[in-house]
Image (cartoon, rainbow, N blue to C red; front, side, top):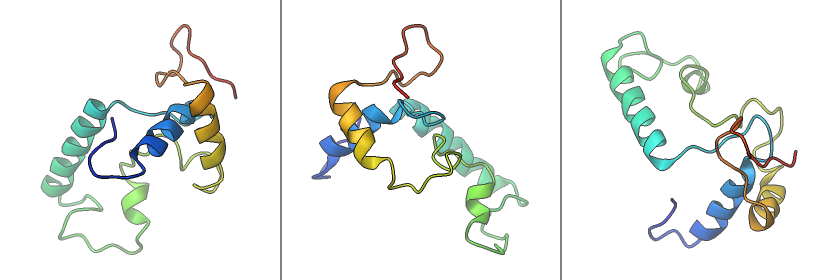
Length: 110
């Protein structure tokens, strides 16, 4: 899923494997992310009222994240983004979470 020239790719992938143990965090398949992000880009370019449209003046940088966010739940936890990183990595190393929450047999420890 994560590759290329990123020297930390394996560590990031392991952390993402552990991400699913912490509700409401979920990881998405690469194909899902690509399709959703492409559709959001088209929407932002065609909808003149979208916060990310080039002609729309942003009042604050967070305006872009408040509309049409696609973040896997990380902004709904009430925690700082770095606060779960070590735990996610450790759990990803020993017990990979099923990335599809609610599926029968889904393994969530938290």
